Image (tube, rainbow, N blue to C red):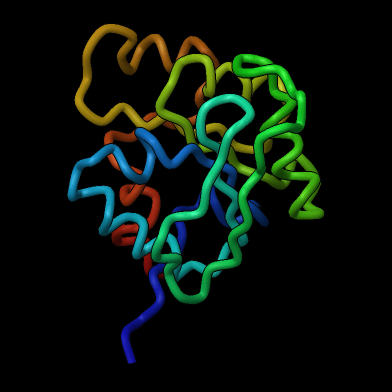
Length: 156
């Protein structure tokens, strides 16, 4: 049986993760698929948020993953307002300070910080305007180029 990857120390106090699939998990880059697979092995409950007021579950949900979408029609404001991310935490029955936000957009990073989430991670992917420094200034606790960096090589 394969060993379950350990989350990075910054993720250990986190009970849930809210993330946007577009740009964080499915940037259409193959490297993100491996991170998705590893994330499912950590057994953190997950909700995904896509664009303001929209979300979907991937056609193939990984095993050991508790996932439900936040759906259209909630009437919540879009990012950088933290309302939709707060709804994700509420739907998981996890307090916002115990929920991490993983975002690739500056507005999403700002929403995570403004919402009081326990951890805000910015995913840079292929860097362009609005890069690492901007994401840090917007409130990211950590900036990674791939979400798999939060899981790889973290064995105790």
